[in-house]
Image (cartoon, rainbow, N blue to C red):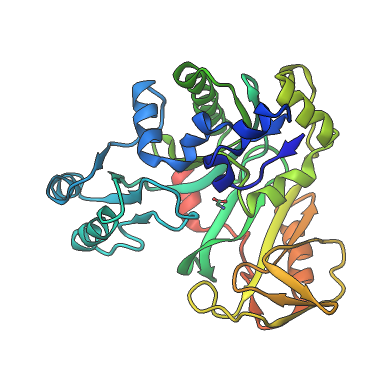
Length: 360
Ligand code: GLY
């Protein structure tokens, strides 16, 4: 069995090629992986099947109609249709200060291909990841990822500086009904993918949501685990992972009880100084006593027994405990024992006040 991690090989059809040679794959075939690698396709598909959580949007290949739509919506997200390693989407009120900036970015993207312009969602982000066997979904606890490089949600967007789960399925700013709505969206998506492509989605489905005042809305779907979100949820699995993967490829996941431990987790990345714009590369990293945390070596390399940065996110640590606070302390203590030209977010797990306003 092969478990395909990243999206680029899935987009190239590696799952199709492996199945053809008789090797079962956890990871969707190209017909279904399109939900991640073609953002315009994904929105048109949501609209066609009436899947909840789809924003007002349109897909453009020309400037003038795109500019008119930006004016009409007034507050937009601008997305290139293809894969950009999670770094292509820009939203007003964040990376795009005004309508003119939104138009300029649209114009830049149109040089390379179609652009999706959509209504901007306002609320708290959360991620729901599910194991899927073609029909049945098993959901991991919801995760929140912190994208900004610096303390206090400031600085440039990154691949994700850290992420957390609570001890249970939902996050502190969510109600159980928010989770049920997000689950239903993902279930409807898997069902509609089968209707559309006649291919069962077997793999990890990642739904990125914004919890707005009118419920969860879909930012995008990915055809894989999130990084860092995978590091929060995989350690919570109590059921044998090979049994889970076997059930996914055979289509029998619905009959397998999959259990998760009810612990909170906090994951934090140590990243090179200057990341993401001007990262310190080839700089040695020293790992000392990380206590009870788990450690994941990410974008680093080893030379003559020493560990060096490459320029991307270097090392992640994960704390797992009864509460978010206790998990955060375990992760933070570990980070303080990793030395080098690095930085990290110290208070990733603290709740911004906007989340409380949202659910009251
Ligand atoms: N953390 C976001 C992603 O993996 O795409």
